[in-house]
Length: 479
Image 1: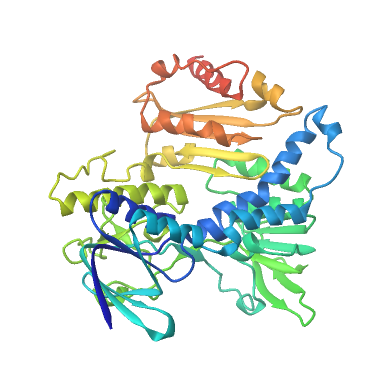
Image 2: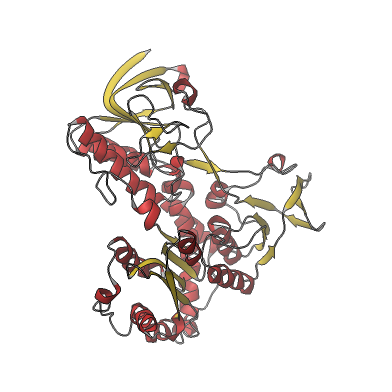
């Protein structure tokens, strides 16, 4: 068995692992990264990038059709084959040469294979042809293995070989009929995309669409999906699934009805990729989410650090926030705190300190690229009340803003601001409407910066832009 030693070893070369390793190397330490699939991870090949490429062309087409003059210039339908080719390019045709080249230029060693923790600070990598390499970390091992799609325990579902988010993001052919189990982000985005491609889409939702968002979000997205021809079945669950010899999938529902489809997409949550990474060798449960302290060191069920604090977990695997940008934010904190501890420097672990991920609890931004788009950050009104904050909720019709009327004929949208009355700061902000994604960062800054409302009054929005909604919300608050 070959052996090598580095300051830090990262298991998982997705965006999170790459960022950890990069920060470590920039801090003057050495780093090795272990990857069993493609360097670049889920986001690059089966999630963020390819799925948004699937959605963008239809969004642009719809925007043109909402504007006189542009509408008349649109003479054809969506070119699905061209959309899929563009998707392929954004997924780098599922080749990671570019990402590997970047690792090399950044001074990060890459080991291809399956990484397993074998003892304190030691990771064994099982590579091709049975070759095993033992890597030892002087300072830290970071688990950044992400998450995978969860397939519910529904009789016959696994045997029916369902699509998960991976197959939906990488499909080379469009099914005539697509059934989707779930009502979250993956379900609504892929329903939007495949309906635009011509699929007959049926969404099967147990509790409601986009349940974690403000109630008006799910209502508007559901309405839009139905207007696009999607069948949204609320309050139902699959009780059994089968695929016949002709390839048709049959889904029996709790109400006794049956839905038939050519493919079924399961979009029912995520599960951690920790089943086979050696957690049992250090007293942790394989297949479990990893719990971390404020600086993202792994702790056991009793809250004690693993060993002397050499094990970290960043990204989906710690279940704090299952979003790529938030995982990369954690990665920056992890890389920097490992360097600080290795060099004996001060650790800034108070709220909003350099070495913690405070925004995970207070200011998580998220965009859902449906039509209309959903952009939110911070707490919903219900979450703020559950946190026992004394809140005031301010709503405004986004279509009433002059910039919205100019943006598209028949523009429809809604904005909500959740204010902590005791501190006079915003703790939550939600927008739903066409092209609202780029408006979100202003709200993120306001929440992270805890900007008082009386100071926000002096942040004058340009006219006539959709951003003028900020002025209207503040005016409503002052009434």
